[in-house]
Length: 321
Image (cartoon, rainbow, N blue to C red; front, side, top):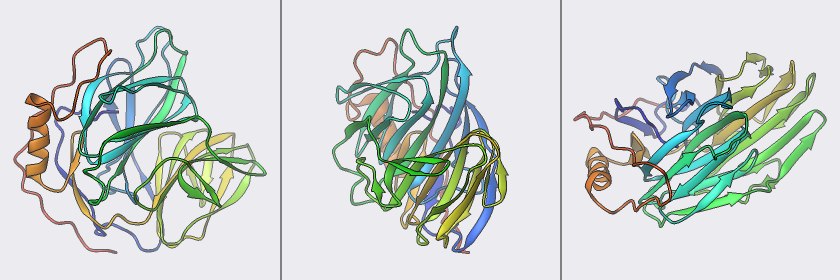
C-alpha cells in the first residue's frame, strides 16, 4: 500500500532515541488519510510521538467500510524500497500486482508479504466484483542495512499457525509467538499476531522482555493492560514485559506488533526508506524518469506520480529514556 500524502515529509526514524526501556501505556491517536477511491485510513505509525515499534515503521487501519456501491481500494502502481509491506484483512479481498509479475488475491487472515529490497513497484485494488465489506490493516517493516538492497520478492501464505487458549485464537502473521512461527521471511527479530478474543475472555499473553510492543485495536472493545481500547486506536507498551494482560468486553480483534528496538537510523519519505536525503532523492528521480522500479502490468490506469521532495536538513534524534 502507498502513502498517498502529496505533502509527504522526511522523517528520521529508528535508533534507540525514543525507545522506552520499561513498560508504559502510551495511547496513540490516528491521523485520517484518504487512500484512493472510497477508502479512508487511520494512520497510526509514523506518529508524532512514536515513529517505530521494533522494525514496524508504518501502520494503517481501514474499515470496516461498506463498499457495495463503491470502487473500494484503488491504489495505482507506486514504488517501494528498503522495506517489507504486510497486507492483513479481516473482511474483503485485495488484488495485488507487482513489477515481478505477481498477481495474487489476498483474502481475510492470509499473509501478503512483499519485500521491496532495492526496488519494486505494485498496485492494490478491490476486485470486480468485490465483497460488501472492506476491513484490514497495512503495515511496513524496515529492512536492516544488510538486507535493504536485496532482490525483491513476494510471498503469499494462506495457512498460518494459530495459538489457542480459552477465549483466544492468535494467528501468527510474522515472527514467533508462544512457540508458533510464521512461514513469512523476516530480517530482524519481531512478531506480528492477530488476536481474536471472545467476549468475557481474560488472557495473559506471553511476551519477550527484550522486545518493544504495541497493540492495534481492529474491532470490538478490549482492555489491554487495563487500558480500554476502541477500534482504530493503538497502545504503545514499551519494553520489559514478560506477559500482557488482555480482557475482552465484547468479541474483539487486536493486532500485536513487537520486535527488538531497531538500532539503525533510517530516513522515511513517501514510499521509500533509505539512509540519507540523497538516497531518497535518487529513488524519486528513478521512479519519475528511470526503469529501476520496473512496470506493473495489467492495472487499468496510470501510475502514481511522486510528490515534491522538500529540501529539509535532517537532525539526529534524542536519547533513550
